Amino acid sequence: MAMEGTRLRRDVTLPSQPTKWRGEQRRVGRKPQARMLTIARLSQLAAHKLADEARVRADYYKEQLRQLQARQAEIQTTLDAANLSRKRFAKFQAEVNGHFQCPRCWINEATRSRLDPVPGTSGEEIFRCVECHFEISTSA
Image (tube, rainbow, N blue to C red; front, side, top):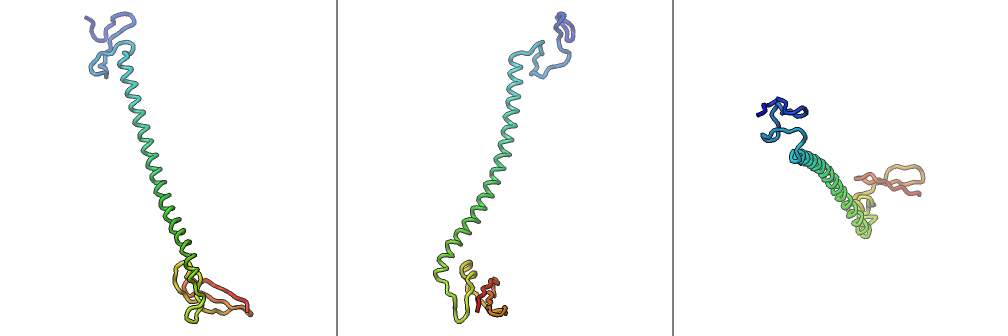
């Protein structure tokens, strides 16, 4: 019977350290089963790494999608306002109760704001909105 660490043949020795293979003694050269376990373990590690990378990509794309949805909501709001402006134009009155009305406030917000005269240069009349400060100037 051979003892651990002793030479059996010239090119083969028994290991003096315990092996990591579930209590089996390690032999010179790899067993196909041991190699398969190593490949299986490496494959499992690679799959884990790939899954982690996919999770990171998924998080990135979720954030991109959230930003796109927020941008879509902004665009939809702007589009709705643009469509409303055509309807508001149909109801626009340049003068209400003896005062000129601000076209910007009416078209953009559907609010009636007065245009007041402000001093201008000779031969020109300037009117400014009391709310949004939109100005209209005319030549006299």
